[in-house]
Image (cartoon, rainbow, N blue to C red; front, side):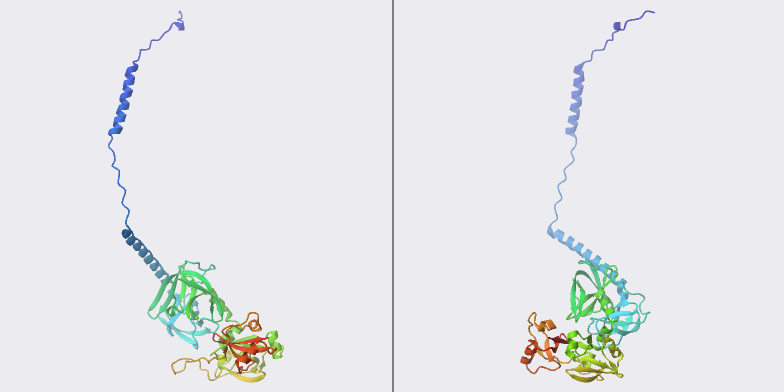
Length: 429
């Protein structure tokens, strides 16, 4: 077989017409452009007009009312949950807050050893447990089965500004509540006690006295109590601290007698000429100690047959009763006197003439100012005090009072002043 050389093979390609291809391409492009131009257009929507202020205002008010209604319903549900820890005292008519399953807290109830309170559909008796001029409240023991539980006290962290709370109280007809917000925590002085107040953004009046202040989780944060001339939400931690102090002997004596007894200081022991002893430091006007004849600055020498050298020797005063008084001896201005506690004339009840109890009148010389760094300032005398006695004797003239306070005589003096419903003994050197 003979071979054919590759170089001798040739291929013939038909000749294409470039003009026809170009025409087809131009036609396709024209169709696309024409279709784009002739395609139906979507109409452009006009922007919606903005609502006017008159149209917006009702919507805003509606939203606010809705939020308020929701908050009120929520506060009401919290109040329903914690209402079991608010009880009603029939006489005097006021609210009390449950503290433990056997203890309730009320505004101060003077001269009441027992109260009648309504718990659910039942009536029970509360017996006085804690009371005294140093406390802005009274506490009463109730039967152990009166309350099924007690409220949780506030958690470790105190309430913060803006936190919502509910103030819950009772009336003879049922539960009353009000929603509020915390403004701040602040110090407040109630009598001689310096406490913490939870300031709220709603006013608190006498109708809220004894009410509990709860957070939305049902924790008890405060109890509304009288402080000065107004009602204040006193922090639950401060109340608990006072309850613990009430178990101490000095606090029990203060509650029982309205008298603050104290051990003599070194300067006072030198003034009286004794190595140690107990002095009447201050007392509340109109309380049992005042009615028994005690005076600030008295040195207590004996109680019954026991010589008094320490506060512990005053224990018998706690057991004293009107029908079984305790005799005691005091030294006043170099004189020895015998007194009886409690005074047999003290009934602890309002008089029939108007139904009121009158305090002892306090006169004396008004101290308008005290020079800083002076002996009077160092002794604790303050502007607004009234000077009553010097070494147990009322000063005959204002000149004599000035002389003693300015220490012109050069000798120590035991002065008695009146301050805020109390009479106080101060040693001026």
